[in-house]
Amino acid sequence: MNLPPLTQRFVLHFGEMGSRWGINRTVGQIYALLYVSARPLNADEVGGALGFSRSNVSMGLKELQSWNLVRLLHQPNDRREYFQAPDDIWTIFRTLAAERRKREIDPTLSMLRDALMEQPGAAEDIHAQERMRHMHSFIEMMTDWLDDVEKLDSDTLASLMKMGAQVQKLLEMKDRVKQVFTGKPTQEPAKRTSIGADGRVGGGDDGQL
Image 1 (cartoon, helix red, strand yellow):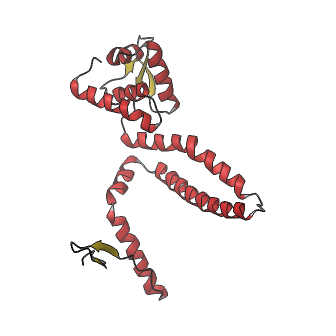
Image 2 (tube, rainbow, N blue to C red):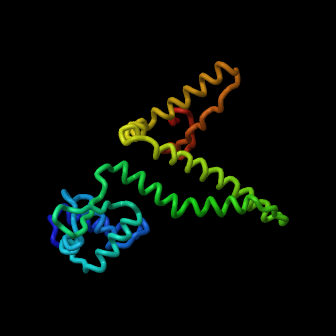
Image 3 (cartoon, rainbow, N blue to C red):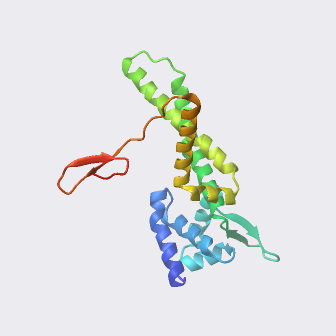
């Protein structure tokens, strides 16, 4: 592998992690190289840098194109095809979310919708269908959230991710305002439980014994 030390470590790590993300080592390394490269690379340059055959590079690039994770470019007076990963990390995040939804979530939603339209007779199937109903509701809620996220520009999405605990405080404030106007008490947060050095169990909102 003909790469500087830091780049090589990054590329090798992505190759090792590839199998955990559902891609093979070759595809992981190709993507990592394109992501850190200062300029678009053609297939020969990718193969030379990583020590891969032309056929392996070609298959890897086609896989990345199918995921919309690389862009195909052309250079003036050059018939070769060049490839580049998106610069914006949030674009990559949105692309991965959309592709995983299309490949993994949408087929499950389709199956669940069909199952919920059936009229089961056996008690076991009635129970199973109810569990499917809960799963369907949860997945639809998450996909609706992803739809909203995909509509946000990168700066807004970054700001939202940085809010962290402020979102929880905002929700708690909303509940307090609702209580003032409705007179109905809101559900108290679950008390945290801790175990002391003597083995006794204690609890409280502050987590102290």
